[in-house]
Length: 222
Image (cartoon, rainbow, N blue to C red):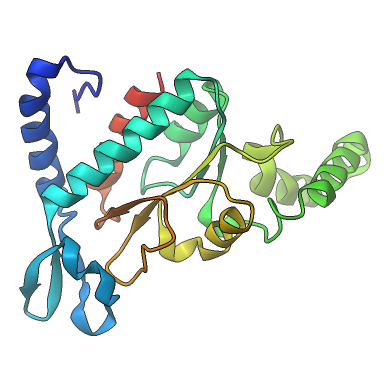
């Protein structure tokens, strides 16, 4: 997708129209059944259809643009961001990109409780493991690098945490909350957004929405 986030002001309306269309085509407006919603999300809905929540796409767009602006500003200042979780089909592309841009990453399924709140223990474990790498079995090496390849240079708390799927990463969010680290998070209508600094409500589980996110995040981090 040829979206350029850094558009001149006179092109803002054109960018908004393109982004809004992409969000609609990616079906980010599809929420969960109403019986499972968090009542706080009602202000971000355009309605309920067949007992399913329909998310207001203009609100999603507004929140997404704010989140991207925060990410872009931090990146320009050489601040470090920890990205937690990946969209479908974009793991290898984004892992390589985050690494080149000197940011951190970890998969949903490989989050280790205490990674941030027990930072000194993680630092000691990481240092000792790498120091004795030649004595480790292939199984131990695979286990270690699968979980920690994206945070090997994480020696202090990141300046921002970007959670791609809030429901799958509550532990990561709680650790960020404990350490007062600002959080951008993609939420579903089942999630409570009250404590998230930059919430983005929408369905980002499809292949198209993953491609859209990758396009946007790669452009605003360059």
